[in-house]
Amino acid sequence: MGAAMRRIHVGNALSAFGLGFTVPYLYVYVAQVRGLGAMTAGLVLAVFAVAALVVLPFAGRAIVRRGPLPVLLAALVTAALGALSLGLAGTAATVLAAAALLGAGQAIMQPALATMIVDCSPAETRSRAFATQFFLQNLGLGVGGLIGGHLVDTSRVSSFTLLFAIEAAMFLLLVVVMATVRVPHSPRIQDAPGGSAKGSWRQLLGNRAMVQLCVLGFVLFFACYGQFESGLSAYGVEAAGISTSALGTALAANTLMIVVAQFAVLKFVERRRRSRVIAAVGLIWAMAWLVAGYAGLGHGSQEMATAAFVSTYALFGLGEAMLSPTVAPLVADLAPEGMAGQYNSAFALVKQLALAVGPAVGGPLGASLHGPYIVTFLLFSLGISVLAVRLGRGLSDVQDRPWVVGSRVVTRGGVATEPVAAEA
Image (tube, rainbow, N blue to C red; front, side):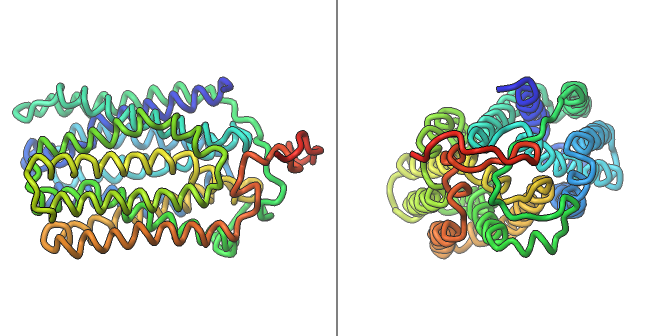
């Protein structure tokens, strides 16, 4: 791992640590500590999603034109300003404006950091780089949430102001760390779709494999991440009688599974077709929904229901660990030369759409229609496997099987080199 990649991973960990400090406590802070009510708190969460949807279509073009580092630095300063403002805001208008700044900065960080990882890693090591990123993000979120929970006191506004000030400081520290990164030119797979570095949405939509991956990505995020804190938690409380402490244990089990299993899973998926790994995730998540169905509809003891519900979140974590070294590198390998920023931003936009729609659909369904809720998302998970298999038919060998990249002609700085190894 080069110096640039080390700084990028430190940046990922710091940003996740800062977010973990505040995200779990946003609702309580706005609704109770500031006394602005549940409606304003709900609007704050909605503003995060809307801000992301507004800025992401422009973020990709900016990354392509200016490079990922300047865009990342601007996003970090914006997020720091938003976090500090949120800690000082006392009215609904100022809280919503601060949330918009913080949400926009956070949204742009994702594709900018992903593009820097692409530029600092050759195709044969990219899966490991993204797996490390996902590992550090979850570790940072978990540690940040744990420390933040011990600092806040709902009876003291100043404790939350301190929390948001620390988050802002993390973003500004990250500006200092990332400002020294030298992003090298990354080797590119020669048979990736060609195109202009300026890019356009029309060109992206003309890439059939990328469109298929975006559809698949929407289903992935809709059926998993979009349900964690909405439909699935509502289902657990209403159908399975899960306590709030048990719900917290389930979320911890998800994070623990990712942290413990990430690199063991990486060794398993590195030499397997990406499309088949994603298809396997669909089957694992289908199993998770069946276990969730038992928790709420199985009429067993409360202890068994709780154990099953916690196991559901752990199974989702296993699937997430398999996806992290698979999906993000595939987005990069589908992008033409110089277009990784726009492709990463497009995929981040799809993710945000899924995360906005998922809770809106899953929340009411999970709270009231327990059986249909489980059946619906069981079918969505099986649909992931079907879509992944179909996607695999349209991928080239080096896109679906990245370990053979050494046997292909690879472009370094625009000059084609000869194959360096025979295909295994």
